[in-house]
Image (tube, rainbow, N blue to C red):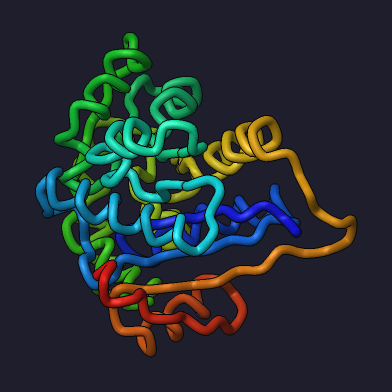
Length: 267
């Protein structure tokens, strides 16, 4: 019996993190909740996101989760502290925009951040900048609409390209040579972003670092009970339309999956 990890995001974006978790913890049983009935989080109040995060964590615990990953930068900013206080001993691993590695990577001394408005306005993000920016100039860009195109699976659409052009242009004009993908939905747009900005710009996301931190925590706090050679399972839930989620999440996960509706009391 492998360890059971619960993962939630405002929608399907956290699947970009789930890919990294599956690669590093092949024996873990993964339960993923897409809160697509409430997406996007970026334009919601911190109190609203905190309430959703509490509900989703309670649901994941009811399903046997022994650790939680907040696979959403906006939910991390609004709710990570509250969840850690409320669920004291539970390992909770959260997202942070990758300011530290981006600052290390830049050659021009300018780093651009693509993120939701909620992430950019958070005190947590401000503290990250203060801690790691140093002499590097950080320029930020809120990206309304980008989460929505990923939720629809429009990864190569004209609309997606137009939004990416609009949001990256001001950052490139300020000489940014490194772009932080500050939302878990955005790595799914990385090929299109790369196409728009060219090969000379570094794209930095946080999924692999989150997976490594999760493995570090669970190896210490939840020693493996896995039988060698046994692969963990994945179960998917959504607070949105389950039929639509099945289609989009199968596309993003890379194999056909069945997405179950979240029980009514958690919606």
